[in-house]
Length: 421
Image (spheres, rainbow, N blue to C red):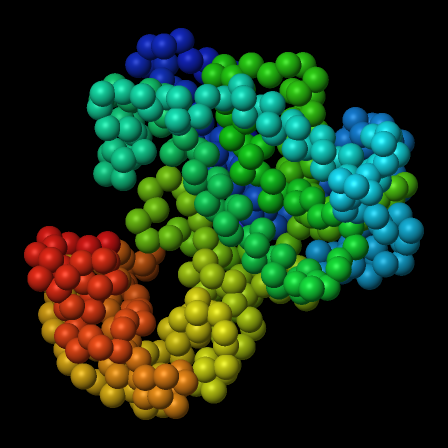
């Protein structure tokens, strides 16, 4: 997936009129998609642009421009960081250990402090939903579930409110909840292992940068000149490179991936994306470093390439187990794991689908249990509907009661649902 073209022309400025609001919303959505394009870009890094912006950030931190070391992936960074000791030996400061003078802090700590302070100041210039949604009518965050953004404007909801769900939330969900944790889990040192260097995320900082970029370009927020220059430097890095690790006198920068596979999650209406590929890495770098993901969940390689019942039962992570079972196939898993069908029933919340309740023998999970097999109420991007399993209490013997329990309802209450999602 490559970056899309930034919207051209003069940015519309919101003047309070409905026509202006519609023009601003259209432009904001184009900017959102542009920032998502940068977040998931597979183009080679623009090294001159990235190095110029990083040198500018070093200057803001009171440090001279560094020497640059480029690596093909985040996984390749740690060996280089170790080779560049002592530039990366003190990335994290505890309050009692921090030098009295800010200028004596490691440059990575100074940059982290600058970024945090900048984001706080920018956020204060953009009123949050808590201040904007004090109205007699229900807040837009609720109406947005069923109302198109353009219709929301016509219905009298404020542009600022709508931009929160049209721009801020899709960027945050797609980037901060997507590639950032997946790459960190798969390619950086495991928990308990002390990594060298503070990690900055380059293209995967697009969620907060894009949000503030949209606000400024539409005239909804005015930033002081110094903050605007700082935001522009962080934005330039996000548009031109992958993850990076600043050290004293040297900066290690990773290339962007060469392959990224995403899809819209079920019910996506505002450009949201999630990592997914059922047969190969969802993210792959030029050196072979890879991240596997199914339906937005980062998983170990075996889940995609060779799922087995034994591996599934040895996996402690519930979400990974769920993905592995779906990859193996529920029918195969039920048969090979020895689950016993207790009862079936039509699904009141999903007409045309059936609920299947299974008993799980003690030897499977270490204790007897129940699994309810259901069909998702929302269609996948290909039009199909995923089957999924829910663990329910061992004492439940009725599939409808089990489905109700998963929603905090009784079986009778669940049976009256018009439709679930």
